[in-house]
Length: 327
Ligand code: DGY
Image 1 (spheres, protein in one colour):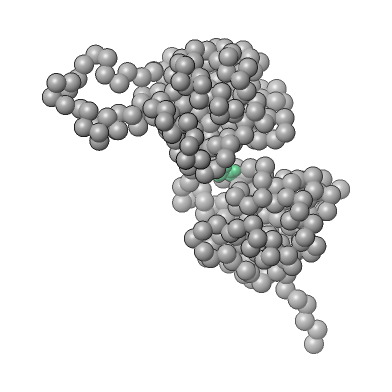
Image 2 (spheres, rainbow, N blue to C red):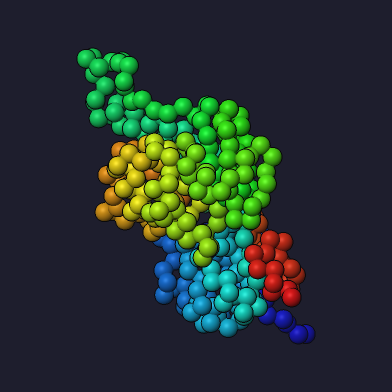
């Protein structure tokens, strides 16, 4: 009797068993079980002879790794963003890239709004105010206490009008905001006034960054862009840190060009301990938790598994980020 070898797969994080089941049925799994993320050396060693890789956005799937993994046919990332994967190198080798669009849209839009509100209404600062025993009998309530910004009646500028940007726009409409939007493709969205990027920066009281990191969007909000931002605006970024010049943002927060910011993503993650952001009181910081709800993460895991299983079985990935590999 002839036995066909089962494909080998490396999974770089423990995932819910319910999500993994179809993959267990289709392949031999090597699952990185440790609480610390897999290091580069371990990744290179353990991925060397795999047919498929299920990775997180924390692993650099670069040309070196792809070249070392001669048998790799499919990379499935449990993220919608694919900026950690060398797409050109993967495509050249005919390696399909799977990702998880759609299932984290509303969840990420919720966090965007949480940060907008928290930054505008100084929620974290107010929390610290109480914990640091600043709230005393002699200042129980006074007209100037912890004043913030109103969302209602203000203009929100959304940079990037993909699914998440549109979900943010829907929330903004319910808050009675005027919504402007800019996208690289010039996409038109009902209820969103199309604007140039410069026009949006100049007119928006709130700015939300909701586009993918790619070569064309890296440092899109550079020093010059910050000089165009309407004085006193609030900036929120739940997309990727690399889109925003962090030093220019700090300067804008310090100098008052920005009233406040809500930041979930950073140029370097985790945020370095000497980052100036940590010292600025008018910034709300969260550690890349845009999609961090149990429901969204379970769906992302299942989707990543479905992509990988399809690739291992020689089928087109349900959510392929480089469909050009299919000719
Ligand atoms: C993604 O999926 O790219 C997010 O950044 C994490 O959910």
